[in-house]
Image 1 (cartoon, rainbow, N blue to C red):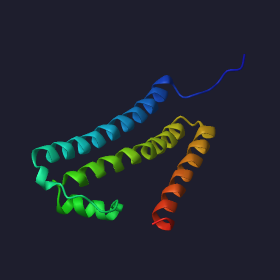
Image 2: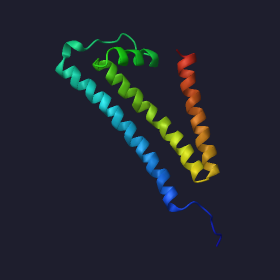
Image 3: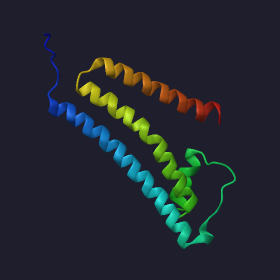
Length: 128
């Protein structure tokens, strides 16, 4: 029976814990933004300023800085964070597999990350 040399279970579990933390923190931040937006909309219904189009990331960042209590902007920020969380998860997977020295999965995860970055760049720069 062949012996496999691998990193200890502590390191393996540490990588899994980091991935789990990234997903959990991303979902909690996203939910916090969305709940805050819903609460502000419920308490101050006149503060709702409907948007005619979906804001770009730059416009969204400017609106968060200039009008932090705009409920629509907070809900959009929550959705953007929720969409960005899987990207953070893939980055964490690449780093975790690199720490574990599992180069096959580093390559696969890196390819997935490159595809995600390509899709994001395509949607931002070419689709508008």
